[in-house]
Image (cartoon, rainbow, N blue to C red; front, top):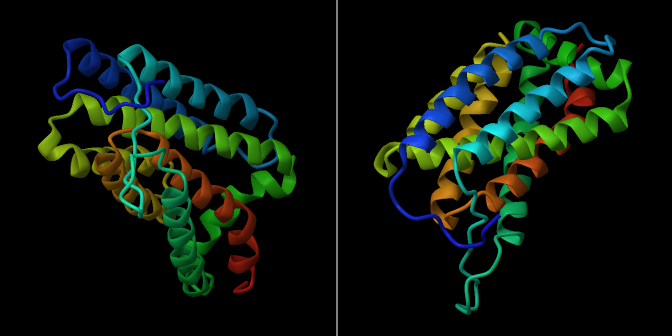
Length: 221
Protein backbone atom coordinates (compact mmCIF):
# COMPACT_ATOMS: atom_id res chain seq x y z
CA UNK A 1 0.00 0.00 0.00
CA UNK A 2 1.15 3.52 -0.83
CA UNK A 3 1.31 6.20 1.87
CA UNK A 4 0.46 8.97 -0.59
CA UNK A 5 -3.12 10.14 -1.24
CA UNK A 6 -4.56 8.75 -4.43
CA UNK A 7 -5.06 10.89 -7.52
CA UNK A 8 -8.47 12.31 -8.35
CA UNK A 9 -10.76 10.47 -10.73
CA UNK A 10 -11.64 6.80 -11.08
CA UNK A 11 -10.94 4.40 -13.92
CA UNK A 12 -13.43 2.01 -15.48
CA UNK A 13 -11.53 -0.83 -13.81
CA UNK A 14 -12.11 0.73 -10.39
CA UNK A 15 -15.83 1.22 -10.97
CA UNK A 16 -16.44 -2.26 -12.37
CA UNK A 17 -14.34 -3.95 -9.71
CA UNK A 18 -16.01 -2.02 -6.90
CA UNK A 19 -19.52 -2.79 -8.21
CA UNK A 20 -18.86 -6.51 -8.67
CA UNK A 21 -17.31 -6.79 -5.22
CA UNK A 22 -20.29 -5.01 -3.67
CA UNK A 23 -22.78 -7.53 -5.05
CA UNK A 24 -20.77 -10.58 -3.96
CA UNK A 25 -19.91 -9.09 -0.58
CA UNK A 26 -23.53 -8.23 0.23
CA UNK A 27 -24.63 -11.80 -0.50
CA UNK A 28 -21.85 -13.36 1.60
CA UNK A 29 -22.46 -10.92 4.50
CA UNK A 30 -26.19 -11.69 4.57
CA UNK A 31 -25.41 -15.42 4.68
CA UNK A 32 -22.63 -15.19 7.28
CA UNK A 33 -24.59 -13.12 9.80
CA UNK A 34 -27.57 -15.47 9.64
CA UNK A 35 -25.54 -18.52 10.71
CA UNK A 36 -26.69 -19.87 14.08
CA UNK A 37 -24.30 -19.04 16.97
CA UNK A 38 -22.13 -22.03 17.82
CA UNK A 39 -22.13 -23.34 14.24
CA UNK A 40 -18.47 -23.78 13.17
CA UNK A 41 -19.51 -22.68 9.67
CA UNK A 42 -19.46 -19.11 10.99
CA UNK A 43 -15.64 -18.99 10.88
CA UNK A 44 -15.09 -19.94 7.23
CA UNK A 45 -18.09 -17.82 6.22
CA UNK A 46 -16.71 -14.65 7.81
CA UNK A 47 -13.23 -15.40 6.49
CA UNK A 48 -14.74 -15.73 3.02
CA UNK A 49 -16.41 -12.35 3.50
CA UNK A 50 -13.10 -10.73 4.43
CA UNK A 51 -11.49 -12.35 1.39
CA UNK A 52 -14.17 -10.88 -0.88
CA UNK A 53 -13.66 -7.33 0.42
CA UNK A 54 -9.85 -7.56 0.32
CA UNK A 55 -9.69 -9.14 -3.14
CA UNK A 56 -12.18 -6.64 -4.51
CA UNK A 57 -10.29 -3.73 -3.03
CA UNK A 58 -6.96 -4.70 -4.54
CA UNK A 59 -8.37 -5.80 -7.89
CA UNK A 60 -10.13 -2.45 -8.22
CA UNK A 61 -6.89 -0.47 -8.06
CA UNK A 62 -4.10 0.74 -5.75
CA UNK A 63 -4.84 1.32 -2.06
CA UNK A 64 -3.36 4.35 -0.29
CA UNK A 65 -2.65 4.69 3.43
CA UNK A 66 -3.02 8.45 3.63
CA UNK A 67 -1.36 11.03 5.87
CA UNK A 68 -2.42 13.35 8.70
CA UNK A 69 -1.37 16.81 9.88
CA UNK A 70 0.50 16.87 13.21
CA UNK A 71 -0.46 19.20 16.07
CA UNK A 72 2.97 20.81 15.89
CA UNK A 73 2.43 21.71 12.25
CA UNK A 74 5.34 19.53 11.14
CA UNK A 75 5.45 17.12 8.18
CA UNK A 76 2.32 15.04 7.60
CA UNK A 77 2.54 11.64 9.26
CA UNK A 78 0.65 8.35 9.41
CA UNK A 79 -2.80 8.94 11.01
CA UNK A 80 -2.51 6.68 14.06
CA UNK A 81 -3.04 8.64 17.28
CA UNK A 82 -5.89 10.78 15.98
CA UNK A 83 -7.61 7.74 14.52
CA UNK A 84 -7.32 5.78 17.76
CA UNK A 85 -8.79 8.70 19.72
CA UNK A 86 -11.65 8.95 17.22
CA UNK A 87 -12.36 5.24 17.65
CA UNK A 88 -12.43 5.61 21.43
CA UNK A 89 -14.88 8.50 21.12
CA UNK A 90 -17.17 6.41 18.92
CA UNK A 91 -16.89 3.50 21.33
CA UNK A 92 -17.82 5.68 24.30
CA UNK A 93 -20.89 7.06 22.52
CA UNK A 94 -22.11 3.60 21.53
CA UNK A 95 -21.55 2.08 24.95
CA UNK A 96 -23.47 4.96 26.53
CA UNK A 97 -26.29 4.28 24.08
CA UNK A 98 -26.18 0.58 24.96
CA UNK A 99 -27.40 1.44 28.45
CA UNK A 100 -30.65 2.65 26.87
CA UNK A 101 -30.86 -0.15 24.28
CA UNK A 102 -30.45 -2.78 27.01
CA UNK A 103 -34.00 -1.97 28.11
CA UNK A 104 -35.52 -2.40 24.63
CA UNK A 105 -35.78 -6.13 23.80
CA UNK A 106 -36.61 -5.50 20.13
CA UNK A 107 -33.22 -3.83 19.65
CA UNK A 108 -31.25 -5.72 22.29
CA UNK A 109 -32.03 -9.35 21.49
CA UNK A 110 -30.78 -9.49 17.85
CA UNK A 111 -27.46 -7.97 18.94
CA UNK A 112 -27.09 -10.42 21.82
CA UNK A 113 -27.71 -13.27 19.37
CA UNK A 114 -24.93 -11.94 17.15
CA UNK A 115 -22.60 -11.65 20.16
CA UNK A 116 -23.37 -15.28 21.01
CA UNK A 117 -20.83 -16.23 18.34
CA UNK A 118 -18.15 -15.07 20.79
CA UNK A 119 -19.88 -16.51 23.86
CA UNK A 120 -20.59 -19.96 22.39
CA UNK A 121 -17.52 -20.16 20.16
CA UNK A 122 -13.87 -19.21 20.53
CA UNK A 123 -13.44 -15.63 21.72
CA UNK A 124 -9.86 -15.33 20.37
CA UNK A 125 -11.05 -16.59 16.98
CA UNK A 126 -13.98 -14.17 16.93
CA UNK A 127 -11.66 -11.32 17.97
CA UNK A 128 -9.29 -12.15 15.12
CA UNK A 129 -12.15 -12.39 12.63
CA UNK A 130 -13.61 -9.09 13.88
CA UNK A 131 -10.26 -7.39 13.33
CA UNK A 132 -9.78 -8.95 9.91
CA UNK A 133 -13.26 -7.99 8.76
CA UNK A 134 -12.84 -4.45 10.07
CA UNK A 135 -9.66 -4.08 8.02
CA UNK A 136 -11.21 -5.67 4.93
CA UNK A 137 -14.33 -3.47 5.10
CA UNK A 138 -12.23 -0.32 5.25
CA UNK A 139 -10.03 -1.47 2.36
CA UNK A 140 -13.13 -1.88 0.25
CA UNK A 141 -15.65 0.75 1.43
CA UNK A 142 -13.25 3.59 2.29
CA UNK A 143 -10.64 2.40 -0.22
CA UNK A 144 -11.88 0.97 -3.51
CA UNK A 145 -15.51 2.11 -3.36
CA UNK A 146 -14.64 5.62 -2.12
CA UNK A 147 -12.16 6.01 -4.99
CA UNK A 148 -14.68 4.74 -7.57
CA UNK A 149 -17.32 7.36 -6.67
CA UNK A 150 -17.13 11.05 -7.65
CA UNK A 151 -15.40 12.94 -4.86
CA UNK A 152 -18.26 15.37 -4.21
CA UNK A 153 -20.62 12.56 -3.18
CA UNK A 154 -18.15 9.94 -1.96
CA UNK A 155 -18.84 10.50 1.76
CA UNK A 156 -22.67 10.21 1.70
CA UNK A 157 -22.65 7.56 -1.04
CA UNK A 158 -20.23 5.17 0.68
CA UNK A 159 -22.01 5.70 3.99
CA UNK A 160 -25.37 4.84 2.42
CA UNK A 161 -24.03 1.79 0.58
CA UNK A 162 -22.28 0.53 3.73
CA UNK A 163 -25.52 0.87 5.71
CA UNK A 164 -27.62 -0.85 3.02
CA UNK A 165 -25.20 -3.78 2.77
CA UNK A 166 -25.20 -4.15 6.56
CA UNK A 167 -29.00 -3.98 6.60
CA UNK A 168 -29.12 -7.32 4.77
CA UNK A 169 -28.30 -8.90 8.15
CA UNK A 170 -31.70 -7.67 9.45
CA UNK A 171 -30.23 -6.38 12.75
CA UNK A 172 -31.54 -2.81 13.27
CA UNK A 173 -28.85 -1.74 15.73
CA UNK A 174 -26.10 -3.04 13.45
CA UNK A 175 -27.50 -0.97 10.59
CA UNK A 176 -27.57 2.14 12.80
CA UNK A 177 -23.97 1.46 13.78
CA UNK A 178 -23.03 1.14 10.11
CA UNK A 179 -24.46 4.60 9.41
CA UNK A 180 -22.49 6.20 12.26
CA UNK A 181 -19.23 4.32 11.71
CA UNK A 182 -19.52 4.64 7.94
CA UNK A 183 -19.98 8.41 8.13
CA UNK A 184 -17.13 8.97 10.59
CA UNK A 185 -14.67 6.78 8.70
CA UNK A 186 -15.66 8.26 5.34
CA UNK A 187 -15.03 11.78 6.64
CA UNK A 188 -11.73 10.60 8.11
CA UNK A 189 -10.86 9.03 4.76
CA UNK A 190 -11.49 12.36 3.04
CA UNK A 191 -9.28 14.26 5.50
CA UNK A 192 -6.35 11.81 5.42
CA UNK A 193 -6.59 10.70 1.79
CA UNK A 194 -6.26 6.99 2.59
CA UNK A 195 -7.50 3.95 4.49
CA UNK A 196 -5.11 3.68 7.45
CA UNK A 197 -6.96 6.20 9.61
CA UNK A 198 -10.37 4.61 9.00
CA UNK A 199 -8.90 1.15 9.71
CA UNK A 200 -7.50 2.22 13.10
CA UNK A 201 -10.78 3.94 14.03
CA UNK A 202 -12.88 0.97 12.93
CA UNK A 203 -10.74 -1.58 14.80
CA UNK A 204 -10.75 0.47 18.00
CA UNK A 205 -14.53 0.71 17.88
CA UNK A 206 -15.34 -2.85 16.77
CA UNK A 207 -13.01 -4.68 19.15
CA UNK A 208 -14.14 -2.50 22.05
CA UNK A 209 -17.78 -3.19 21.19
CA UNK A 210 -17.19 -6.94 20.96
CA UNK A 211 -15.63 -7.03 24.43
CA UNK A 212 -17.89 -4.57 26.26
CA UNK A 213 -21.28 -4.54 24.56
CA UNK A 214 -22.50 -7.95 25.72
CA UNK A 215 -22.19 -7.25 29.47
CA UNK A 216 -23.89 -3.87 29.05
CA UNK A 217 -26.83 -5.28 27.09
CA UNK A 218 -27.20 -8.21 29.48
CA UNK A 219 -27.52 -5.74 32.32
CA UNK A 220 -30.96 -4.90 31.01
CA UNK A 221 -32.16 -8.50 30.75
